[in-house]
Image (cartoon, rainbow, N blue to C red; front, side):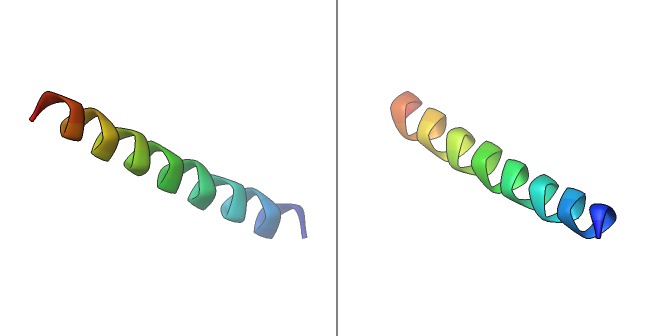
Length: 29
């Protein structure tokens, strides 16, 4: 159960990082 939760948490963190990168690129353009 804990492992599954950690994996889900990591996925959410990766999605948040990707979103942040896209916003940064959008500002630079």
